[in-house]
Image 1 (cartoon, rainbow, N blue to C red):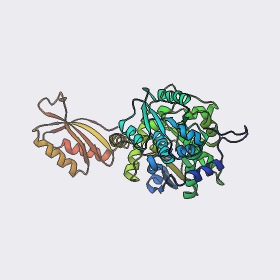
Image 2 (image 1 turned 60 degrees about the vertical axis):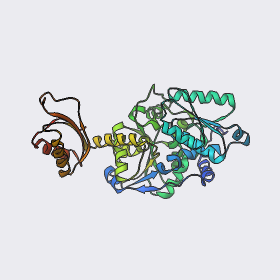
Image 3 (image 1 turned 180 degrees about the vertical axis):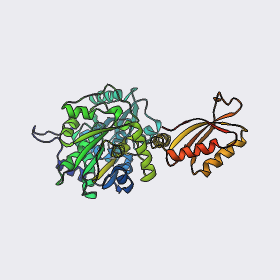
Image 4 (image 1 turned 135 degrees about the vertical axis):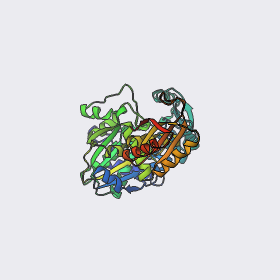
Length: 416
């Protein structure tokens, strides 16, 4: 959908976002703002407020824009139905909006979409069509089908009504955190930051709006710096929710007006942020949702003395993926190490290893018999262990204690 506007009018204005809030008020949650002294201390900020869209309906902010768009469809458009393409959060937002508005919805997903996400989308009443090996092919198919059937295509971000819906987060943020100086927002296609930025730039106080992208999908900064859309040939990041190759026309034009800067973070920094959110804030975030915190904790931003809002945009991550992310995050925080041991007197010596790890105040995450025997210890049993500790010094002490055990040799260790 799109609105007709004069050439000198903003694509999305504050009144559009305020109208969207009225439209979606009975449907979406007013998500909490959780302040964190820990993250304020770690980032040198005066205060940090986490806007927890990971506890929104469907597990992300996407229901806001989807419902705002679909609630404005004409009776004829509702009768024909809606189609969208997505491998994740947008799919569930459109599906739930369709269920609430009694509109038939079809979601086109690529072949790589996890079965759990497909079932979650179907659980909201949508028809799911698996088409294409990558998202771009699913997107093309959805557009082709919409042209044939007359279904309304609901874009995940390049739509003024979608942007206005996402902007309702900004209205809540100003009310919950009126002294905010800076907000950090993940950028994929740009719908979220365009909506939030529209609201904050219309506020009475000057609020800095900073976008955050993964290094493997960092298209927004070169686009905004050059004044023209730059498209990446491909993307490579763990943060699949913001793994877009470019901004599109609507979000590019809005972002040019409301985004002050864009920074990039590594996948390992994102994993560390996922880990810290689980440990310190007791909240589960997907990679894209944790990216803004990763930026706040990096050395690339000066947040000293500021009141910083961080948008945790989603929490749709399966348990095995979350476990892998947190393990990588602990590596990044230098609180996890893996080591190969050579043990004499198997399996009795295993007990001594376990007891020593516990006595040293560490956590034994993994202990498994390895296949490769160390060249210097041909008559001993190879074992791989994973250790969690409070820091590199603690982990070094644990490994030294293990080396001191009779019949136990530390052959190799990695602390990344």
